[in-house]
Image (cartoon, rainbow, N blue to C red; front, side, top):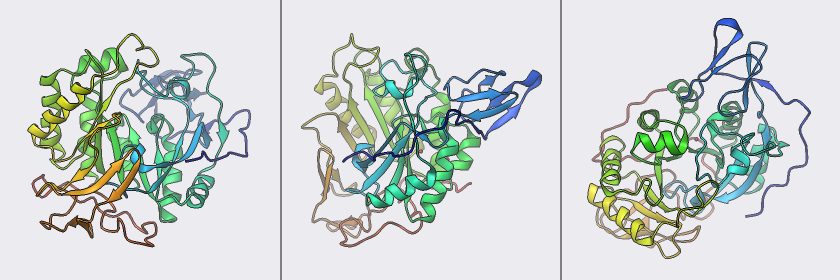
Length: 383
């Protein structure tokens, strides 16, 4: 897919008042967008480097200031059970609340940690929606960098997208606060969350974060009715231990449901982890087996040229969707979103219309189809 070509460039000072902020003593501001809950003193910025205290007011430096805007296959997110084969218009700003040593988008996410900030361009929310519609998109994805740090941009764009009949999806590290999730929940239909490890030590040493808030966010997203897919990048010697992977997979089954897709992806050396070898394919195959043994019905191997990324019926094992690269093709057994062989509904969003000629963007957010064996989500009012 060709990237969207921006035509307008930013003003010298794009600062905009931020939400999710609480005034503290001596002019400090507590940011409550993410689980770091940074205490930001006057003239300073939070861990993300894009939310700053200006004279006692928290401002965002990236509202409407994109660093990337592309029309991508939704399979690239990866979201395999959300409008398969469709286009997700994908946007990002600079900044992140993690500093992962293996970040593949470090040039745009790790601002001021690696030299000058990434160049950005002005792309107002209404223009994002117009560009998405012009590209034939089914959804808008907030991705590449962490959407939480540009939550104001996400919320306004998502509101306009919903009015235009587009779905909203997040690709996120899951480090939101419950306060942020309450704002995102009514607007976001699906999310792929990186559950990078089931070991808090890994998160502290490799990412600069903690595990517990991510687990809480995953549960909270499910309670908000957001369709979830989980991705774990296997890094040799750091997070590929079998017992930990088994515990992670069992947690997904117990807390999110056995039909929650788990994407197990292969690591390649990048950024500050160039001294490690790529993940052996045997490790990915082992992890896939661990996930299935734990009871997960949809486990996918990522970053492998010959990996199995087809979707099979959770009831009888019939192939329902075939994938090669980022291309998805419905199999004859997928009819009206369910298996023609055994009648089981395929869990996900927008699957009933998949393969239907002429189907347009959804006019409302369809409910995520939950596993019949998973506990029902609690509806409340979280990318």
